[in-house]
Amino acid sequence: MTDVSLRTHAAFSSPVGERIRTRAALTVLALVFLALVLILPLAAVFTEALRKGAEPFFAALVEPDALEAVKLTLIVAAIAVPANLLFGLVASWAIAKFEFRGKSFLVTLIDLPFSVSPVISGLVYILLFGAQGFFGQWLAAHGIQIVFAVPGIVLATIFVTFPFVARQLIPLMEAQGTVDEEAALSLGATGFQTFRKVTLPNIKWALLYGVLLSNARAMGEFGAVSVVSGHIRGKTNTMPLHVEILYNEYNFVAAFAVASLLAFLALVTLVLKSALEWRYGGELAASGRH
Amino acid sequence: MTFSDLTRRSALLLAALTLLLAMTFEVRAETKLLNVSYDPTRELYKEFNAAFAEHWKAETGETVSIEQSHGGSGKQARAVIDGLEADVVTLALEADIDAIAEASGKLPADWRSKLPHSSAPYTSTIVFLVRKGNPKGLSDWGDLVKDSVEVITPNPKTSGGARWNFLAAWGWALKKYDGDEAKASAFVSDLYRHVPVLDTGARGSTTTFVQRGIGDVLLAWENEAFLALAELGPDKFEIVVPSISIKAEPPVAVVAGNTERRGTTKVATAYLKYLYTEVGQKLAAKHFYRPANPELVEAENLKRFPKLDLVTIDDFGGWKKAQPEFFGDGGIFDQIYKPK
Image (cartoon, rainbow over all chains, first blue to last red; front, side):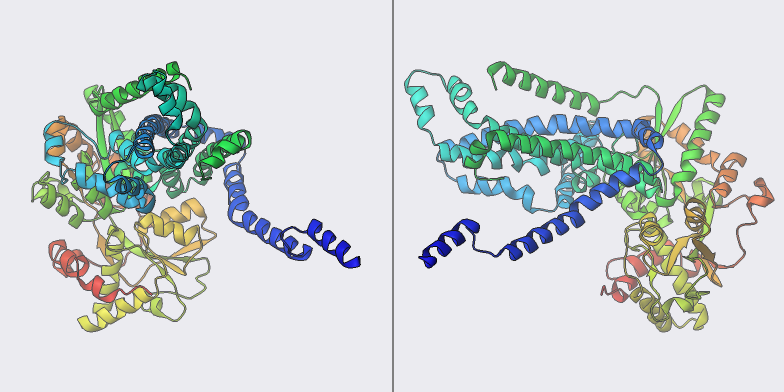
């Protein structure tokens, strides 16, 4: 009798089996760790930015070079994200719905930007489009500037944000299979109708999620962009590069002001991401990654 | 997402691509010069650019705006070689401009003869920046290899300033050991064992020392050391002048290959020549560079520069010889520097 009640009690109090004290210790450890590596640095960014009050903070943000950096960052993201949206859709459609030779190779290739260092991602474009590079002569002869100009920055950004959309979509589309599409086709829908009325609604949340992640990375990328930028003030500096320049000029308030703008963008992304997960958690879970 | 959303997205994408193309072939409305420079000249050129733009407007009525790019000298030279469209380069040392001339052919081999004072409108030297009160009691190069002393200097492979640092140390050791190269090599090798971080550029090293509080002494450009004092407080640091240092001549040059194509040769040449005028020289002195024409500058702006024994690059056979010998692949630096 006593035995039974004890066992029931234990089962209710802790389904995992750890003692209360262990759990408390683990929670505290996790929180302390989070505070140390995440919250403290984030707080430091905002404190440093506002160290001399609100006025220098906003002055740093509307300074012409800073505005140009914000503008460039937005332009780059506005090109890179849709480009990768399109590519991600096409690639995952092909991978999930069709069988062809070299498919697993393509899947591996899509992951490549995750595994190479961003510096390499930048350098490959110098090797291709730099003056001494593979296409350098031809580009120079036609007066086209790719590296050390906006196109190079866009290319490098596309490269590093390449996998985000596709990695979200492929598992989901594979899990969903082709049954719905086959039904639509057999009922007389055209290919494009099928895509827009059957496939797209099935994947829209995962798609949005991928776009969000790739946008965050596009705006925050430093390494690859730094290699191809040429660091011309007010011209080829994105926000992360501008932060470094300001910091190197002993202009700490301005550096942290621009950094806090980046951090703010990251926080907005995080809120949107959480909102998506909360609202459409089930569908996102089906995609198997987050 | 509906069909019209998708069309709108494609339209946006198309618009973005058009914009991108438009930017690639951007038409230049006003004359723009790109000055590709090294790290510690930021403050100097910020002020000098404004002064030159005003001067040029008054002289010719044309509007010119000067764009700046800063970074480690070697890295900047590499970028110009790879196609960064510099009209003028104002780098830390001759060897970097030589590299551009050699690899890209955009400069004549005798570019140094195009401007007065071997194309060096200002010079500088290498000094020590130490923490206030000089707690480790460092007064000359020999003190830098004492136990527990940490020395901050950038990587000579990527930084021009770092190469001057290296050669200044080498020059001191040669004099101390009566020209015994093996002993000089042993000293410099010992010195680099006291370096905990090798940054890529001079400014990175300054930040490491000043901002992150690492190290006991920063081997710095004299101008960079003065600037750190002015910007970050004379109450925190002080300058120590060693018995021997090196005369660093950061040269400037017009990248003719770029300016001829862009039609900016005239204004680019005028820009560099303006560095040698009273305005340019005074600004150089104000930003802690030793002006090439000190007679143009008020005496009070010169007295901050201490007199000291200076070896020159010619003592090492010029950059053409010193660069490959000391800093080339497999050169002396590669042989003696072993990261911990």
